[in-house]
Length: 181
Image 1 (cartoon, one colour):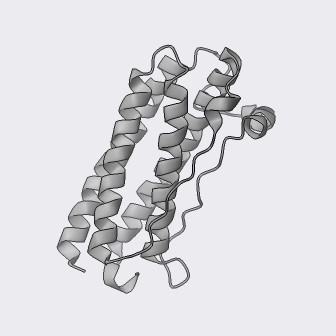
Image 2 (cartoon, rainbow, N blue to C red; image 1 turned 180 degrees about the vertical axis):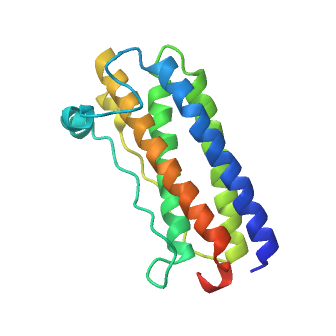
């Protein structure tokens, strides 16, 4: 694997993750009008666990530091799966929120990040690629309240996942990629 090309892709990916993280608050503001649903939850997460479960909002895959047990290929698979999941969730929400523009912009950024992840697959000459099957969320968004809660939970979780991706990318930048595949 050509290290300098890999590191350039990692840097572009980090830039996109930062863009996603910076755009989440704006998207939240446009999509979630309830004042009780903020991006800085305190005790609200316990109260929303039932809604998360009943709406069937999936959790992103767990990311870890690169090691012999958690290889670069595994990390890229989990990042790819999580990004595909958030594209699906945001797509379902775009059809239901009154102002979808900011969610569509996030979807575009996620798509661009997926392109970078695909380039890392190619540079690493990895074979297995994950295909996300879909959440079916759209069928469970029966009213405005459900849409608001689903948008809120999806954006909060995307924010957490994007922070995990950034840490993973930083770890990749510090690790010799050829030793981690």
